[in-house]
Image (cartoon, rainbow, N blue to C red; front, side, top):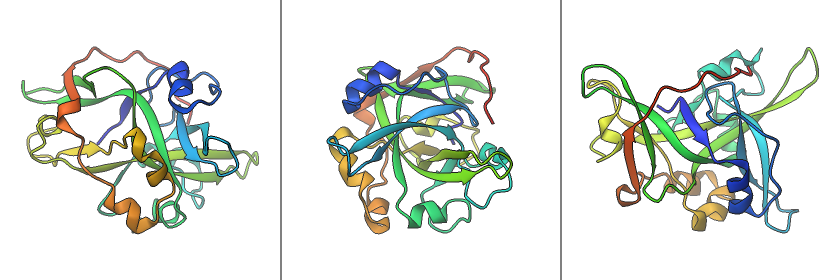
Length: 218
């Protein structure tokens, strides 16, 4: 499961979407951090909009934001059924998360070593996610948040190397640029059919350094 990623830089998001850059955000994201998401916008010339949202989905019924520390990933096999995610799935609240890379622990040495997974050409890419809105009853603030979808990756040449030996291997779901519209406007059944493994030939992995501490927003 992915708990840490590096969002695409504002200039890269602008280049990818053709839209104005969103306000600045942390260079690495953990649950509770703000990061950019791309959504469909039928009223825009591009058909897209970019906003900041918190990493870790906060469903509308939640009492507070703390649930977002546990809902940063949603399993494709159960996302339509789990209480935290099913409303967003049923309402077709799809989004894309633009990123440069994401990080996973490799246990091949017997201890967790942080590794980076990214495109071979180092270009940013987008992964499938769902979003939801939550209203803070104390302040009236409307908070948008997201959860990145994951798929089984047992046997995958890259993602099969990460997490403890006894753990199931999971991977984010990459959505290529040519499939953005299809994903963002999909029906629940259509969305489910698009959730497939990361293409091995376009991605690579390498050992990464320790993340820099940054402000937690939740």
